[in-house]
Length: 435
Image 1 (cartoon, helix red, strand yellow):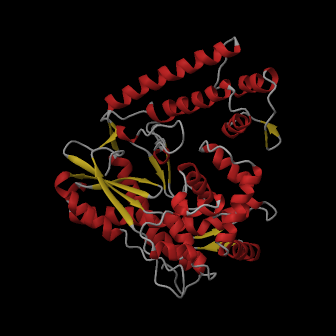
Image 2: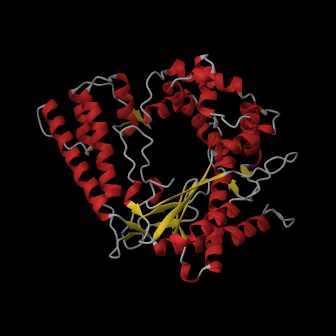
Image 3: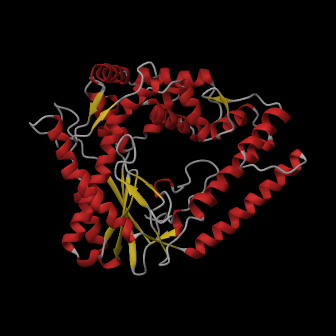
């Protein structure tokens, strides 16, 4: 732990000195190295998706009988609300045609082809402009600019670098959302090298399970400990649909996944519905969303106790601190549920982010000590993943060092042994195909 007897300022200084500052140095080295891009594979994707976008544009024009700029919010608003007379969607008291608005309309009118095509067009256009056509440097490598304090829960963020090349590597599509393709195969290791990827296994849920133990709710933790084949999404879905876990269907499991991802952090029915729309999960109307929430609270009674405890704490001090010394002040209004949700999510999300950052920082330190001129080096840090580029002869060395770097004791419970989150390690010649 990073806490000291010197009080808050000592804790903040120690956290910065021992964690944030060396992490910034490690990320700067990753920025400088960059990641090689397979230009042939990327060019093929660009050609294919540009043709798809062009075809979609032609179809929309044909359906409405005229040309329209689908990227224009004004023109789309006029089409949907004025011409097609669809129900007007508002956000912050203003008319909107943003992603969630179109998804809401599509849920109401699933057989309306114009809505389906607009969703497809926007996804493909964003993929092209944001990722596939991001500027690559002259040496064939793409470089990002990492921000070591780029998010409110202290996960890192990334963006174009100072010279305008590169892109946000945190959001490279992995293909989990419907209609979005995994394009990570265009990120390749240098000749004679491979990627070694470390992925923290169900890290956030593990942290939540241990937090719940503080409130004498051991149900989730006991499942993780005692059932090697435990599938948390089937476990969540079973009581929602009133079926045994072994009989949970793929559709029901996806609903359980939404319950797990949104249900841990005080999500109301509206948030559940919004998450379901993002993943094109049908059948989640308001009553069903409420049922998901009620079922989850009954299955995990510690959740409400945890939420109330967090709310009391931020109302009293506006401050939350993690076991790794991270401290955050919450300035939001208490009558806004978003403030409470942020405070509840802070401890598990920030803790897992710091574990991932610690692994990255440790691997960089080890690389500088073991090998001259950074022959292997961590080059990517994305959410719960760390990716190292290494000459093939050092693969086993990197795997061993990654296992050691991932031993980060989390003292989440005063009466229990520290939690150490398991890391899954895989190897591949490109980012997508690490196995």
